[in-house]
Image 1 (tube, chains in turn cyan, orange):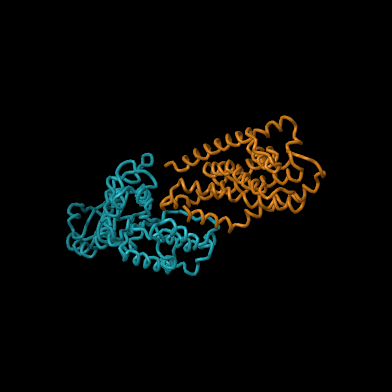
Image 2 (tube, chains in turn blue, red; image 1 turned 45 degrees about the vertical axis):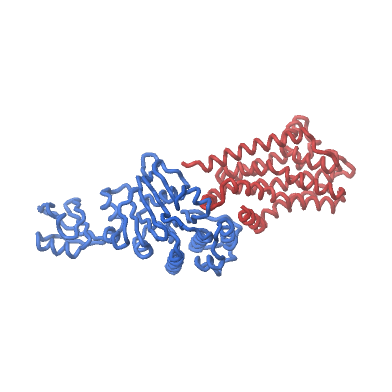
Length: 297
Length: 243
């Protein structure tokens, strides 16, 4: 078995003047579960479609399990849930699973696929009569049924309710535990945090952070400490404990910090403040901080 | 590829609306209109009852074949074909299976109208000729399968439906599937002889009469097959081009 499931080098894709994917380098070891985390418009879907060979990159290369993506897909090593893909009417869930099992060389057992996707009771239901969440699970079953070495899931938990979401992630864990590689995209920090071994943070088509969930949480899960600038100077603010960046907007200073408590205590001892406000950064703001860009998203 | 073929055939079997439309339509038309034909009349070298049987069988077959092909427009729109592209199934095989399945959907009306002709008007042919008639008319649906795929891959679902219907109606009426070309004015009759629908039905009429296929007819049919095939290939490549 190949040690490297995914290798992207200098991957670039433009849509007119917009660089949807802007020079991504990424290597994913076989057997790991990796989250591609980013806000809408970060380039997740484009990256995944380049990775799967659905669109050609403008520059850079993709290797899946040691071969070009098209070859890996033809060889049945890759299963994927692509975004917004729907089903054709007439077929049942069972037909769909049978199709995937027939197309792949080493399929999983039908009963196991249905159980993993939570579709055992819906096996004979027609695809056009499934609810949104059930359809999403059927798409998961289709991606999974072939028993692919690499499972790629684009925003897999969208449209799932809370209970279905938990069952879904449990199924992914079980699949990954068998030594399969799973790459999923999400814009929920907590999903990346809880279910991935490694989180790759994308913003503006670039990798802005890459590490364990704890490392990325420290970056993306920080807080903003804001206060009135008044007559004070911004000098030295970047040296306060925990502070990652300093921004001044309309007479107010916004500090992005990994440790709001320490920052506020130091600030109080150092220079005092007026109109203090501490807020969770949220993923979007964290991305903006990390990439040094504002707006346009 | 076999898995995909099975999948598509199951879908076809589960959708009774298509079969109802393509089987009931021509059978009911046949039962009504063939009763009005003057007995003993001969058209296209066979009895009027047999001529109308072949024409309406072809009409039903073409309806089924075209609608399956053009339903590809819907499958593209919901990105199902996109999903298939990340499986080991090659796009070429998807197209091949689609073409095959659309010709299969032409078989039920061929059989049903044949049975109606046999029961209602005692259209009697030797067993071998019935088989030859079915097989030739089945093979003769290939150009229409390609036309359906050209529509399905070339147009959006909103356009595919009306274009499909217009192509179906004009080709079947002008090709003499509903009203025999013997009743056409000269100009229209000459036009009919250049159309794939007339030449498709001609295969059936000549087989029913015990004659070999007409070389000119085969050439016209082959020409249309190539033309629709090229159209389908162009539409297919345009639909997979990256924007």
